[in-house]
Length: 79
Image 1 (spheres, rainbow, N blue to C red):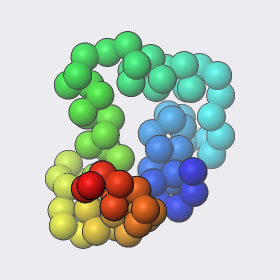
Image 2: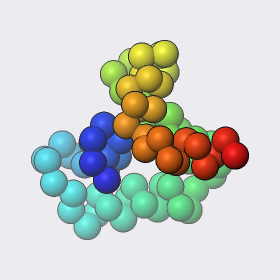
Image 3: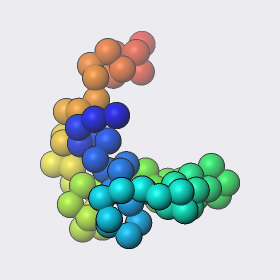
């Protein structure tokens, strides 16, 4: 995964901001996503979309994320 989306996901996994993800960080975030409530999953997705970390998803945040999604994927979603 590259570009803005990959950077956002990496940032969420790199809990200690060391620019690398150790096993504990990987397991912690993976468990948060796969073994928690729907609300926690939504919070994780929200954090990916809140590019400037201000607690809000602005139009600019959405445009930034969507500009990094392959067009083929968007077309498949809306078919």
